[in-house]
Image (cartoon, rainbow, N blue to C red; front, top):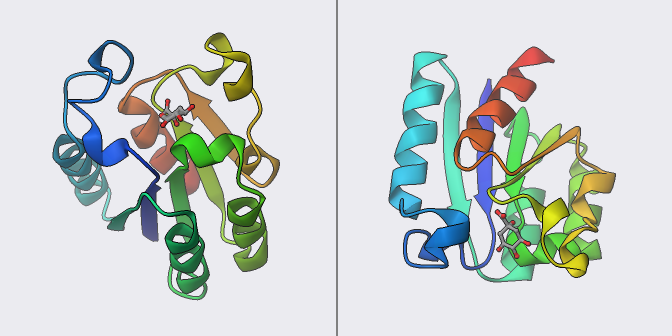
Length: 141
Ligand code: DQA
């Protein structure tokens, strides 16, 4: 099993960015947590983070034929990006959507997710552990 973990805009600022919402751990801490979890389960994992919508679309397209699953936190693009939704649909790779915070209990505009329309599952409000749960969901298939 080979998976790709994609993180969208501002998630490179984890640890600095609104720690009351996203926690004090960094993006590097997140990568290590997921890497260790995957290593214990013999899952090959690659990571991609970008602040640019088109780069995320390119990465999803490039995943075609290379990955068995995608874990994605599209961050702010969750609520705006038809292009990322269409890319996930185009490649047909099983995808699990993750949000560190609970998008359902914050501002109204965070409640709608385009990506959820193509995701196998959406996990929100579980902090970094949500990414590990997403790996488990992909392993279940
Ligand atoms: C987020 C929630 C989004 O609404 C927000 O724009 C983010 C992070 C989360 O992980 O909780 O950047 O996806």
